[in-house]
Length: 98
Image (cartoon, rainbow, N blue to C red; front, side, top):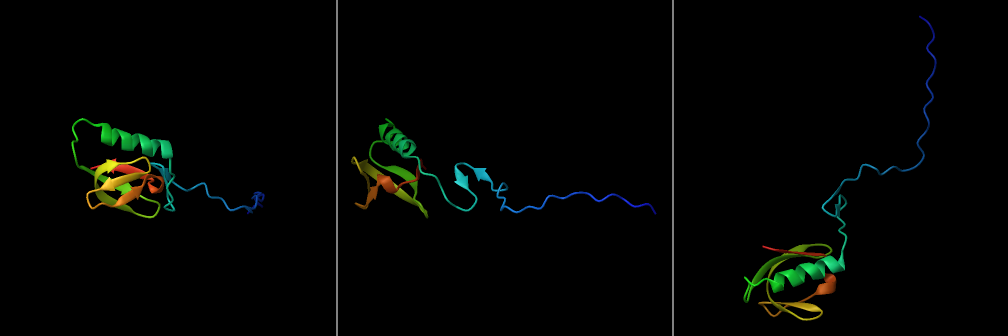
């Protein structure tokens, strides 16, 4: 049997993280990017819709969790729910109408 030449293999020294998947603005580890202008635009679209008179069913995503609410109004800094709960707009990462 003849001798086969050895193949050079470069050693990997750095931590490579190029296999993380990105989808819908969400990283695999669970973090979520917040875009304040996008959130404000979505809130304004929800309340400017002429088909909605009083109650709007929404799903609000915060940094660590998401929750369903029924919104009845908004102020400059907060959203008002049916249960008189104030939701700070600065704490909202995403909002979707149900």
